[in-house]
Length: 133
Image 1 (cartoon, rainbow, N blue to C red):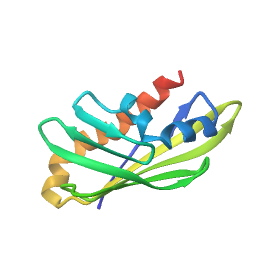
Image 2: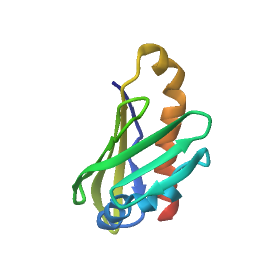
Image 3: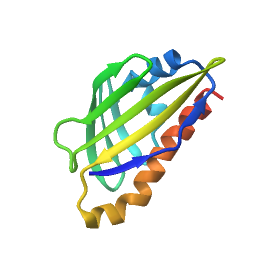
Image 4: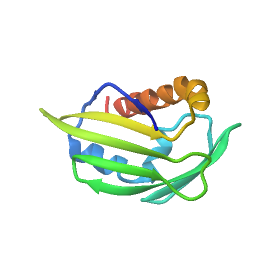
């Protein structure tokens, strides 16, 4: 497994608000890059196409209030992966969020995909910060 993670980001709202937002895939459309097409989601699952790459699906596998949301690959995906959001209350209406993306890649694919996947994780954090700026 290859692991891609961001530095803790500080979000200007409380952890419960961030947890509630990220705990519903219908809200994710505002966080994903423009290369994502055919977005379909309900509260606990989504599917989409990464333009020029692959069709993907994922589902929420666990919600631990104001601590963690665990997301896993669902159905037929070209790779197995998980995405975790971790939350830590910072007081004064702020929340620190860490994002960890684990993906099962062979060494060649890891070398090719490392930069875009790290960019993806960083972009998710930036978009989340922008939402609560």
